[in-house]
Every structure is written in C-alpha cells, then in structure tokens.
Image 1 (cartoon, rainbow, N blue to C red):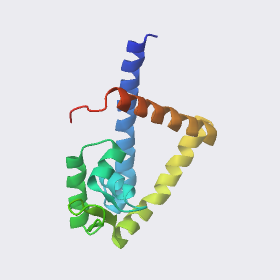
Image 2: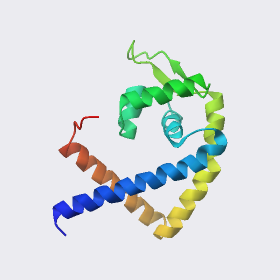
Image 3: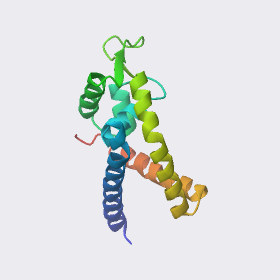
Length: 150
C-alpha cells in the first residue's frame, strides 16, 4: 500500500471512528441531558478548570465551537466561568456540582463501553497500543499540518 493510499484509508477509518464515537456518546450521555460534544467539554474541565482555548486545543477543535458549548453548559448550570489569575481576559471554565453529577451519571455506561472495547480488542495491552497509535497519528498530522484553517 502506498503512502497516499494509507493516508486516504486512515482518514476514512478515523472519520468513520469519529462518527461511531459521537453516536455512542450521544446515546451514553442522553440520560444525563448532555450531548456527546457537551460531555467532551465538561469532561475536559472535570479534573481542573481550563480556558476555552485550552479545551479546544485538547479536543482538536475550534475555540468558537468550544465557546458555544461552554456558554451553554454555563447557562445550564453545569459549568461556571472563574477568574484566571494567569490571564485577565481568558476566564477559566470549571465544572459545577451539577456538572459533576452529570459526569457521574455517564460514568457507568462509559465504563461498560470501555470494558466491551477492551475485550473486543484482545485486552488492555492491545487497547493501549491502539490509543498510542492513534495519538501518534494525531501528533504526526499536527506536525505536518499545524495550521489547518477551521
């Protein structure tokens, strides 16, 4: 297989995978009242508050799309903006108590899906290798095309 074919097949496979993940997480998060996109943003700030730009970089998406989701999460009381001691204008997005409850509601379904995937792939070691391969592909793509217009 040539590099051109491999790139095309990789892109199709990753786009298909993204579609499956979005559909699965929309289903998993439905009971908590979150969309898959809202869950991603809330989960990204669940461990520690981050700026909208930081979340966008982490998720590989645009700041504008994260900003819309962050504003919606704040409006719903699932997240809140906090002052950022490191930057006066770039506020931090933080999960609220209600947001923590929503994340916990998704937890059991998330854990079950993780276990099923792990089994289908042949164990934790294979799942880790898959994650490392996908992460490596992402890093390589970012290094050869760092400023793709959004």
